[in-house]
Image (tube, rainbow, N blue to C red; front, side, top):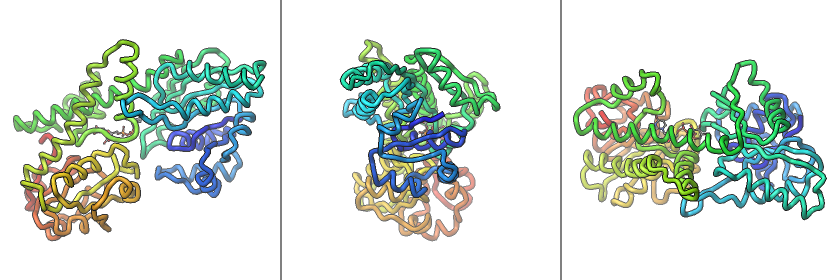
Length: 436
Ligand code: UDX
């Protein structure tokens, strides 16, 4: 089967490459010529474990191609996945102009039956809008004899393990309007039957909502445990013990109960805000998710207060910060708590020395007047405290003696609870984590 994936951002590229790995012929489309040139040369513009190998292997086998020619891609494909950006507007609602543009292109070039699938996270009822826009463009181009159907197939990929998540998902959700579209989408995922991945076949609106509801629920777990962590600090309890024991209840589950500086990234902050926003348009309040967003925002301030509680007034102080990406194994700094905390430290008059194994390049665009260092010890050099902001594996086994010598003050603020408080006390540090 021939398919097209429009938009070669994070989701589009992983989707295209992984479908090619399933043996499907995939053409990936983007209007950014430079990006397409690079991809054609086998250069993957994002850091994602395993992705580059898959891209190269499938390019070599001729199953994965890249183009800026959307018309050609649409015309040769039976299924077209839309994975273009859906950025938030100022008020938290979603900008669908890229989706609309793709819809018009599809309508103008229809040459036979196609299933048009949304892969980007789009607000509920976007498929209806897609259908209208494609239909109008089709009419303008005199192509009404060609049928199409719209579907929603949300992705649940995590950055840093996106390839693995695509190849071994917990479930695949297919929201479609007719049996023909369902059959085509099921066929595309048939490689997953062998590992018995559950397939949820539902309506388009339900599929669209499943993505938001899932992400909002996970975000809720994080904000929930962060508030419990704050309480643990106040009463002298250990949030790790609390979370572990809670998680042993199968109804609760162990995952996403790790406290920290709050959630970041390209999905949770955007999806929670967007869910609140579009629910309002239907006259429905999302009180819980509204609180989840508020708690997440406040958690970042709480992290700065935590640093102040050990360092004192931040004016004129130097702080070393380890980790800039919103989580390990990615170079993505979108909505990263680390970046937010650094900006808040600077507002209070502190100088910042930072280090990240992958995200320094992307952080340079967000941060001014910080020193980008060569390694963790360089970041610690002369600092009044070291802040662990992202839990990269390489920060788990730091040489504590070397760190103490580099620092001007033996203070560590561990926003990810990488270390055990007793171990740090033994090593001669004034140390604080989150919720313990
Ligand atoms: C998330 C969803 O997991 C994925 O299914 C969806 O498709 C996109 O959004 P991602 O943003 O890549 O994926 O990262 P994830 O690993 O889910 O972490 C999100 C944020 O929550 C990170 O900032 C992380 O540090 C934070 N987090 C996660 C916690 O603070 N505590 C936890 O227990 C788990």
